[in-house]
Length: 421
Image (tube, rainbow, N blue to C red; front, side, top):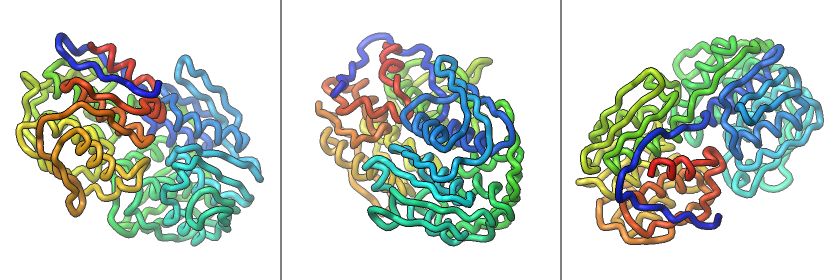
């Protein structure tokens, strides 16, 4: 499917939107399961391009596993990776960052390759930190980027990492810290981005038996491979649920989200608070949350710091074009270095749709206006495709280019969206 023509809502819309498992939790659980002693079963996993890439990397590293895709369940037996293994992370940033740190704790050499998209994404702050631990890294193509050879050093010690560009650098080192013989003392410098993902990592580590101590900007992780195997259940992906919360806002409709609750460990649950400021009524029930959008799809613009849940910048941008007043999104400069330059992508595509918008020092300002029909380019970025499809709920003639890019995290997104018409 080279294009997806969004159907405008003209009649009844709403119902139940079943959201797949969280990518962030799935890939963290897979790594923690691989590091654990014994057999770990992970239920409710997300099956998408990114998680399949992570699963294949673990297979290529020699980990015994059984994958039951029909029931979204994986069983993995932890241990050490096979020396000399070669892995391909495709476009999965979590696989690239998490496995690079993990392999740095092994006394062996490995080769890590990636897609052209992932080769453009930053790795240098993490790889420089790993060199500080004694890892030997060489680059067959471009210094500081994938692909690379890495020969680890299992001692551990104290290092510093710049957390400005990506919280994944910090999460990668936190989880892999327990694999070093002497543990790890990690000092994080620079402005932390998406701190909610770091909190998710710490919580999951505790659930797998690893306690992280924090003293200011330093994290202390005990060594000796102390992860414990367990049965682990993955929450629905809150990032994916947010598109359907936004759909309720735009259409004034009611959507039920099974398995989604306010106490989620995922930072994007904060988008529910934003939706309530826009007039959504959210009711937590026994099986999930029911959201009801504002009457007539009328809601105000908003001024918001989205640093801790920046995956929803594009979602809020889609809402902003129909708001009653301008929207300003702040503190999101780091999203220039994600699957696409997301600030540039949002500005370019909103302009293509006839919306006045401009870049601020650290964000975006959007002025509501009349949307004109257009083909929205998605930059091989799943979140651009999903978020900007929402505009088509209110305006005819919105076409999403390369809709299959949503397979990175939510391969049946458009089927779930259509089920609500």
